[in-house]
Image 1 (cartoon, rainbow, N blue to C red):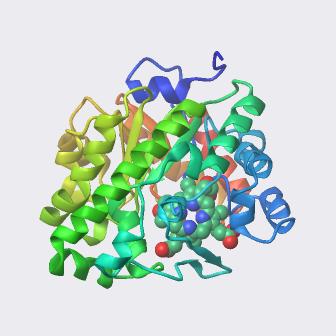
Image 2 (tube, rainbow, N blue to C red):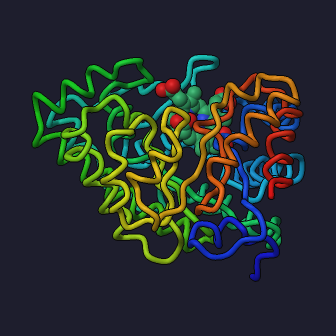
Length: 341
Ligand code: 1CP
């Protein structure tokens, strides 16, 4: 199917665009009252994510209601541990929680390499329905967590400020850590290939906990596996977003991917210098900027756009949109990008 709006894909590949494309990380859940209405019709996040018709519906909402240039499939990065044999629960107001974690050889033996098309059939179905209902209006982004971020949840068992159990594991049991990371990587490659087969037009890898590792550990325990994923995925453009990994920008410039996501701590001109001219940069407005007045949001957005001027860019926030942001301010952000020349 021919896309009517392929700005995102052209910008990712460094081709000419009439204007900068814009979407928001975490645009599909969180901020829209229309999302909450669908969410309240089911028992919780997991049921919503596992009901393909509803997942497709909330995936398309931001395209209809906000006017973004891409949809991102409604799911979570934690579907991979579940597909490997480590189920999670979503605790209301607290986030993900794993009844079992990976601590020993015996735990590792119980895990398997996930088969994307079968073990994650509900995501694949949701992608197929979304593609059909989008009817070519905008591209659909598929995604997965980076192996290190997924590893961190599987060892820790929940979110954490320090992920000290996961980091302890890297020091105490590096060989064991590598074996688990390789299993996650193989599962993720299967999963992303199945997403692309089902119609995902671009894929993004979220390394949300990149910033808690030092540079050497980041190379060894994270980038090495992200690099394997980039090399294994050939058919669509790839985006790597490693939150907090300012120290790895030069290395990220060498990945086999089209786009690098920047968080708002990363200076734009400086990032371009580290990463080089041959990648598209995505980001990077501070999500908290959207708490300002419409005039302030406009000014902050224009200031960001000015700094990216003349260079390969996909406009976004520097991390996911916060749940209590007024959708009207999101619209001001989007319109300001669209009007920028
Ligand atoms: O929001 C969307 O656009 C929908 C799709 C989506 C995406 C892209 C969800 C739904 N989750 C994610 C990615 C995700 N999940 C990341 C990477 C991006 C980021 O850094 O924000 C991470 C780290 C998670 C893990 C996760 N899932 C957390 C964070 C926990 C922590 O350690 O702080 C939380 C709170 C969730 C729950 C979740 N995921 C998605 C939704 C809509 C929800 C809320 C659950 C609910 O409705 O009860």
